[in-house]
Structures are given as structure tokens and as C-alpha cells.
Length: 343
Image (tube, rainbow, N blue to C red):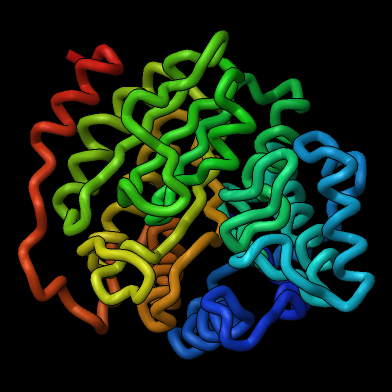
């Protein structure tokens, strides 16, 4: 049986609003591509369960949970202008969070080596009290909090390569010394957070790495971020588990952002994170789906993520390299090395 799993349930398609960028077609396209590329047979399907209300309360307030439940029961609506709730959204969101929690349990039991949670709605913008940025519950934060309740887990590293800063995840763990959060994101851009000086606070000071990138950074810039910043900081932190918020909206042809990553660059980034997990925490790494709105780039980005998790060196990139050269980030990397005492 495969040691690499994918988390999926049809209920994830019931959170849907046609015409909204974050709709069910995203996940449908991913699944169709995985089937066409004949990779599903190499993976183990892990069927999720819904997160219990007590598990949701590990991160979110009762009022936040109840607002989503009530809005779904009333037939749907909007939490804010960007973030919708449809009749099936509460159940889908609870199953998304539960899917990550269940996958982490399997990783810690040694039943899986790694995996990718193909869940919706996404989560990294959701704070303890607020749904925003297309996100209802913070799936990766709920999985991290659950993992930290296990005596086998001392520390968790959360990586985030979505083009938008994961403000919710950072907010939840900014003062927690047992969680290291890093994000490489376009800046200034939605949601406006993620400056390089945001490094955590109180007991968590130094456990946040923000890499705020100008538009136009691509494959080589992201490779340098992992090699020169993420790798040494992760070694210093020593996590028992790595969770990754995987967004593919930094692709050069994505309609919602202005970065210049290619699918080949994403594949390299994902392989490096898998190698990092192999090096420091026994290979225990779980990717979870966040953004990405160019459907072909999204689907092949996820496919290459699975190839990385399987230990394959092959890359599938039908869209090719960015049509323009990328911006250099030498000065930013030097500043961040100084800020995080890497010199």
C-alpha cells in the first residue's frame, strides 16, 4: 500500500458559487488531471471525517463557528464581499479541517509517510474569529493544533507558498514558540500583512519568517528562499512535522497575481520541501490546497506536488517558462538573513 496519500471527499464540491474564482471547478479539474495522468493508482485515498466542534474550538471561537453554521442553514450568503457560504459550506469546511487532522494522525502513527489534502474551502486567511479571503476554517492551523496535542510532536513547521500572505495562520500562532510559520508572498497585496519585520511576538518571537516579494519574482527567487532562508531556519527549529499551505496563484499566468513562477519552479520548490522533511522529521509532510485560479496551472502544480511526494524527479509543465525575466531579490534575502541571524 502506498505511503503517499491524498485526502478527498465529494462533499468538498458542495461549497460552491459559480462565477466566484474559488469554485468547485478548481478541484474537479485537479482530479480530472490526476486521473488523466494515471497517478491515482500510485496513491492511497484517505477518506476524511468531519472535525468535531471541540476540534474546531481548538482554533476558532464559538461565535465564528456558529456564524458559518447558521449562514449555511439559511441557504448561504456572504461573510464578507469576497467570502461566500453556500448551503453545503459548513459541512464541507468541517470535512476539510477533519481531513487534515485525520491525515496528520496517520502520519504520526507511521501509516503514511506524506500526503496532499485536496480539500475545499481553503483556510489560511481565516483567523480565530473571522472568515475572509475565500477561507472559512483555518485547516492547516487546526491540523497543527491537533498535532501539538500528541506527545510525539514537540514542534510544527508550517510553510505557505500561496501568493497571498496567510494572515490567519500567522495570527493564530504569532506568539506560539512551538510553531514556526514561513510565508513567501507578493507584497504589498491582499490581505496587506506579511511585512519582513513581522517575526512573531512574546514567546514566539523569531518563529515567523515573512518573505514579502515584489511582483515579478519567479523560479530562481523562490529556490533561493528555500535554500538560503527556509532550510537553515527549519534546521534550527527542529520540527516533528511539516505542514504546507500550497497555493499555485504565483504562476506567471494566474489571473489574480503578478508573480513569475512556472510549473517547473513549483515542482522544484515542492521537491525541496519534501527533501527538507526527509532530512529533519522522518519525511512527515502534508500539503494542503489553498489558492490557484488558472485551472491548468493549478492542476499540474498539484500533479507535480504528488510526484515530489512519491520521490519522482519528473516534472510535467505544459505551460512552459514565464515569458519575461524575473526580478532579483538579493537585497531582500540579505536583509532577512540579518533579521533572522543567519550570517
